[in-house]
Every structure is written in C-alpha cells, then in structure tokens.
Length: 90
Image (tube, rainbow, N blue to C red):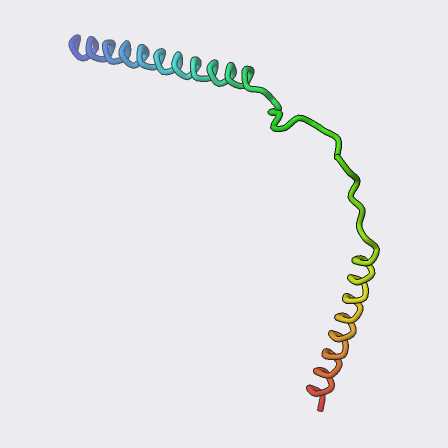
C-alpha cells in the first residue's frame, strides 16, 4: 500500500514538473512571437514615390471607333436573335 502511494506521488511530481516545463516553453514561444511582431515593419517600401512623367490622354478616335463597333455588333446580334426566333416559331 505504501509502495503504491510512493509511486503515485513520484508520478504526480514528474507530471507537474513536465507540465511546468511545457507551460514555460509555451510562454517563451508566445514572447518570441510578440517580439517578432514588434520588430517586423508594418509597411515595406518597394519603390519610392514619384510623380508621373507625362499625362496620358486617350485619343477620341479610338473612343469613337469603339462606340461604332459596339453599335454594329449590337445590331448584328439583335438581327441574328430575331432571325433565330422567327425560324424557331415557324
């Protein structure tokens, strides 16, 4: 009986010792994570800021050509859709 209690107290001490070691290691890992977060920069400058060298302008011809092509393609689509519907109805 005494031998069982002795072994139980020994296992309890070993368990509490290992538990203290584990909690100490977890605490040191948390401290290291916090120190890394504090040391790491929040923003990283990849390239310094500079003003644009010239102003980009879009030519009105390209805009007008895009509008005309969109209008033509839209009309072709409407024509083909109406033709398809009329063929399916007959």
